[in-house]
Length: 82
Image 1: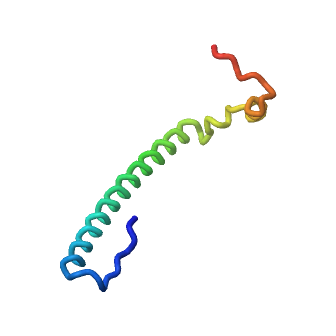
Image 2: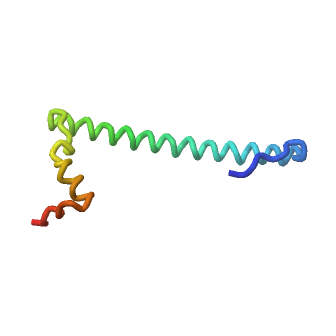
Image 3: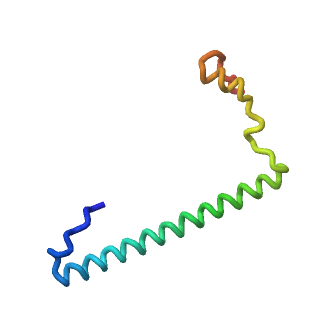
């Protein structure tokens, strides 16, 4: 982000141009924000649908945390690929 200019040194035309540039940038950021919010909403809806199907159980409940901790600590061999 560029530093904010010294406004007293800008001409009227420069001020108008800067306003137009920043307005355009704000519109682009706003559009991107709306797209991101839409994606977040879709992901949340998918997660809720999955949780309804599993009765609220997470796939993480099937993870053996102790075994994973041992693997990460180098104390156990990783599971064999089958």
